[in-house]
Image 1 (tube, rainbow, N blue to C red):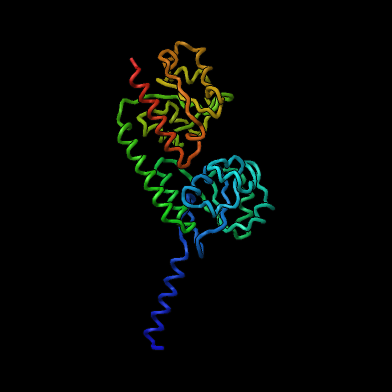
Image 2 (spheres, one colour):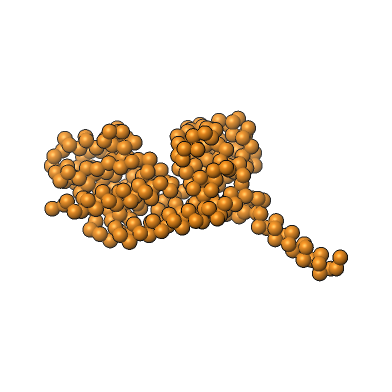
Length: 293
């Protein structure tokens, strides 16, 4: 065998090994290097489960958190804990080669313990709507499912571009976004929901608050006097808990009948379905515009 042929074979082998490796930077700024794409992944948040499936991970996800109920196939995957505590024994028994974790989520100490056992961890954090397709692409890289992930991401980005072009520059609608009624709390301007509101041409009246998910009182809402109140159906299956505002007929949103609800599973989970939720929100806010005197 000639020297040149040996070099060519060696180069081909190196290229094959290099292509099998994965190097991706996560939301913590850490570079995650895998010798090969992840095959046994544990999702540590319901929205992460949805993102993994969208990225082509249907056959790669072996463990999920409680309430991972979409898509339907996710209900059949082993549950390894909830937002308060992980089942460490069950996680280890699943032999994961990657944990995908929501940045700032719970179970920090347990995740650190798993990292000490040399289980790779990848943190995600979505603050802008554009982060949804971008994260789908990153997860596709981690799993070696780039073809499906990139196609899905392109479709999601196209939908976002269309929504922004249609609604973002229309007359602003000041809204109170109500996540829960007892206690009453909302989301600030750093939350991805606020970016969805902005994309629809809306203004989050509590965008300037410091906490990501701040509690507010009724008096603060009355003082801001929003054009519309948007409640999510997670807080009350019947009405999103927003009928409480009917006790305040002087409130602009009540006076003009601008109290609406939206499916919290679409809007409050930062995953691919949030784009459909945002489209529904945009339509509702546009209806408010048309009915405003």
